[in-house]
Image 1 (cartoon, helix red, strand yellow):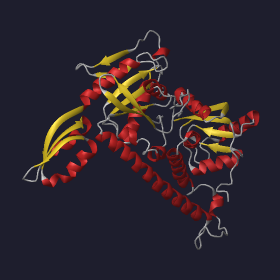
Image 2: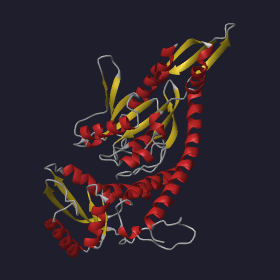
Image 3: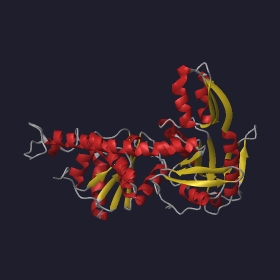
Image 4: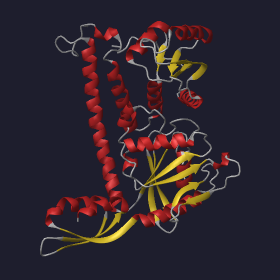
Length: 419
């Protein structure tokens, strides 16, 4: 049974980008075109225009709709991509009127994620995001789902097809969440063992295509997939890095962020981003050659705040200095002589040694060795310390208190404020 009676997908696209209330941005359009190419779709033509507000039925006005029809006839495109968020009814009306598949920005990003997911966990997360997005489209989306159908073994008494689809999607969403919970428990065990072994975790974050995977390969001598395209990395990758005068740390490469990242994607990929949430330090990788780097930095910080990772220490890493004239690898420090930015080229390897030295210094400063006394009623705190800190020695006193000598990351020192 087909869930949707819809036109087939295509690989040759017509792009529609409107300026709503005079908010046109050439950079937004350029980024969307990169998204289209990253989805292995050929953009044949781009239609731009402006409206004070979107049309309730078709998003675009009647004149622009006729223009889209004309361009479809001229270019023989088989899909129309909107650099906007369409309502279910707008998407349905457009497909009925244009007789080709219509996708909005969220659909396109979901499609790219579906192409890039490699691991079992990544595929589950993509399917979860797709189903959560789809479930919102069933309410007022495709009218053929409303009609009553005869079906064996699927439908409850008196259910319409819409109710059946909604129930089946809900069941699948619950199944996926159960499976992801099991995967998350395995990840949590790995993180706890690293914490007990006092191995710091550093996570690479940044705007998509900032060069995180290239930097990851340069730091770890790995060969994970890196390409000049949006969302080249989807599944998190962890490797050990040997630091000068310190020891080892675990480096995590994670999915890149983008402006207007669909909320359901952030929610679905929360378990992947858990490596970021639990990290001791974030390396915020920035494309130093991008004219929009400040906006991209702001967008990344917004997502970090959404996943509650904005309180983790950050070091800015300005990558791609090989694309800038007369900029050498160097380190920026503040008035307290603390490093707040490293300028380098992951492609050329210029400045990698500066970043490794910075990480070594920060890891030395990150942990504090101390002794604490816990009362009998603080058993929960004791259990938490065993999870997040390296316990060097523990003694039980006659009064029931614990005397614990530990090595704890500064990130978790706030736990000790209640003592």
